[in-house]
Length: 251
Image (cartoon, rainbow, N blue to C red):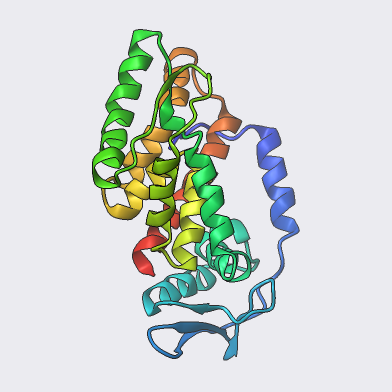
C-alpha cells in the first residue's frame, strides 16, 4: 500500500471523525462456545448483538476469537473502521442469512460484467500487464469451474453465456452466509467475481488478487503518479478486502 503522507485537510478530518466515535463501554472481551462449532462474543459477560439485534454468534471459534481480538484492540473510543471482521459478521447475520440467493444473484451479476473481461488494446505495457494478471484467472475459471467468459476490447459490453453464469451460481451455492458475505465484499471491491472465487479456492493469494484488480490503476500511477487521498481510500479498501479473505479461512 502507498506511504503517501496525509494532507492537512485529511488529518483534520481524521481528528474530527475520531472525536465523534463512541467511548469504549466494556472491560472484558470473551467468547462462549455455542451448539456445534459456533461461538458467541461476550462483552463483560453479555452476548453482543448485531445492529439488527440478533446475537453475534460465529460459525467457528477461530472466527469468534479473531473478532474478539478486534474488540480487545479498541482504545478509549470504538472505531468501526478498525473492526472489518465484526462488520462482515454483522452483514452475514443481518443481511445475508435468509437471503443467500439474492446475494448469489448479485455476485453473478458482477460476473456478467467482470473486470477481467474488459481489455485495453493499447498501450503495450498495459495490455501485457492485463494479460499477465488476468489470463491465468480466466483460464482457471474455464478449466476448473467450467465457466468460460468472453472478453471484449475497451468498454464494449460482452454478454456472458448463460451456461457460464449458471456454473458460477452452482459454485456459489456451496458457501454459507458468512462466506457469501465475504465473497460479496471482495467482488464489489475488486470489480471481479472471478478474483473473489480464486481467493476462496486458494488459486490466488489476497495480495495477488488485489494486484490483479488494480492493473489499470497501477498503470496510470506509473505514468502520472499517485494522489494522496486516492491512496488513502485504496488502503481502506484493501483492509476490507484482506479481512474478507481472512474470514473465508476462519469460518
